[in-house]
Image 1 (cartoon, rainbow, N blue to C red):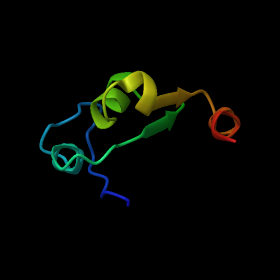
Image 2 (tube, rainbow, N blue to C red; image 1 turned 30 degrees about the vertical axis):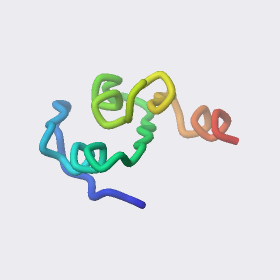
Image 3 (cartoon, rainbow, N blue to C red; image 1 turned 180 degrees about the vertical axis):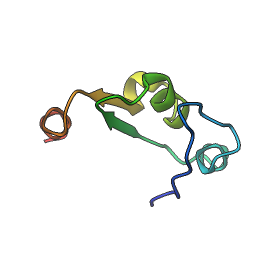
Image 4 (cartoon, rainbow, N blue to C red; image 1 turned 45 degrees about the vertical axis):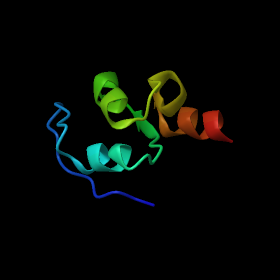
Length: 67
């Protein structure tokens, strides 16, 4: 299931779709690369973020992580 992406401008908002999904018990993974803020990934991902959030320097690094 894909949730609509809302612009956060670097500041996660609790009113975004991920908050509603988490409230329903849906586990969310957050994956980003390059200049993405790790705090944004943590705000999107389910807890604990160490299991559900991953940031890589490149698409190749992300691909290798999940291969």
